[in-house]
Image (cartoon, rainbow, N blue to C red; front, side, top):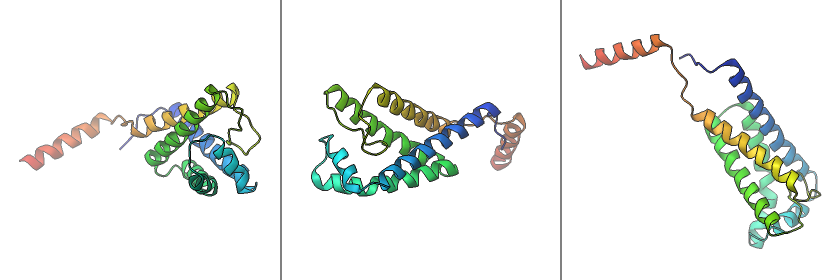
Length: 162
């Protein structure tokens, strides 16, 4: 089946996948190179998880981000990886907006523990979320088919019904 996706759109999808995947890998790397307890403190500052969950997330999230980044870059499982990235980024963004709106002066925890939540971090993470949502939309987009494919499908259906 041929796709009617334009070359610029295909390139844009590839670039967004590459950028998001690279950002997830970089985010994982920055967390894995520091002691995990520092990241746990950044998570705990949001005041949304019990202590046991903070420890689980602090140990597991960087590895999950690394795996997600690799899957995004590979282009495999586009629906699953884009939905997962969107969900993860929506949670991150929602927590950051909540903390900023409450006036909490905490580190976002995005790329280590030394970056405070600010309008810039909100704009950056909001843009990442939009990019991930774009990938979701593109992964569910049905490519248009060539007219010859419609004719062949119709003939096959007629033969089955005959």
